[in-house]
Image 1 (cartoon, rainbow, N blue to C red):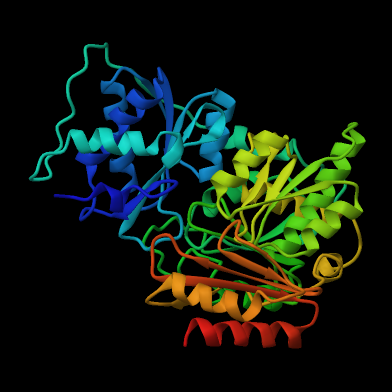
Image 2: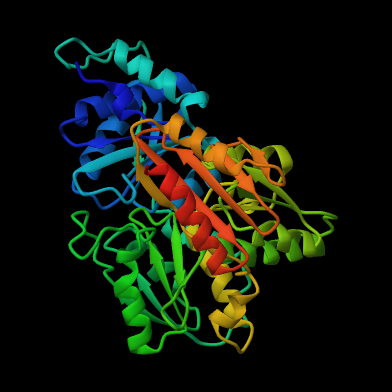
Length: 460
């Protein structure tokens, strides 16, 4: 029997099509989503993967069969779906597997106002309901419900999405910029032309053709090899900067005018500075900024220097969004290039972060590397993964070696050990036999020494 626990992850549904799921199962998820949320209407969008149109249509039919009206917005980025959920005040379903290979697909679910649906907020109940409808031979039978079927309608939200984002950042006075954009054949090729239309930007497009088979490279800019083409293009055409979006275009990575990647922590600090200034100008005494424990020490330093209040969280969008709701934070950022905005229903949008970078760069005469230098104060290892047989034993060995007198230790998310001018975090993957290491220090030599010392223990 199909194991839905392998398909339903902590924050979304994701698996191989048709091996792990198909239209019949998607139809059941649509019905279960309506039953668990009690929604009378929902909005559904999808990315460019070959399986996305049929899977999203089946989900919509399942939802309509359980009485919900369904607004189909068609091709969209994940943050465009969040815009639709927020502006229409409807629960939503986005069909995408983000940066995963072409054979994968998935669903990101949210309640009205783009509030996340995860294991603790409805996703486990949805899975259990679908499991109850699944027979031993994997056939899925959705029980009939004594309600009038909902109606399916179509709506184009792309222009509204673009206008909403452009209303949150003042780009009226920026100087002309040359911007190379690598969409990776993902949804950035759909959203960027509309969002950038009318701005003083010379756009150099790369891989804007929507193609869910990803013929040029994986749509995962977190992996350095997928930035190589963009880096070369920036240097070739003399661009002021480069932007790389992942498959569903909710994350954005930035490359400076030299073709060098700008760390997401530096972008978090830059955007935080702008959002703090805006909030303080509107009368907020101490605007809150959320950052996860893997972001650079630079982020809380900058936030405090500018009169804001930094709040540290575990890694993961559900923790960021929950803390943003509790603290009414204006902005949140993660090391993985997810950026969250209070004015965007606390949801993540790489496009809005990109617009902030354009506004900051275009509002002054210097280069991006000069602009971001003040937000790049430490040497960082980046995330390094190690396959281990016993995560707990290896973590305990590292703790014994480094959690000594004079250090600070916490276990908010894995093991974090900090000294006067360095820190590292070692976290176990929830889904794979991996330990993930991040190291930061005041100078590159100290960082390398720590990195190599911890890895030697992890990989012993």
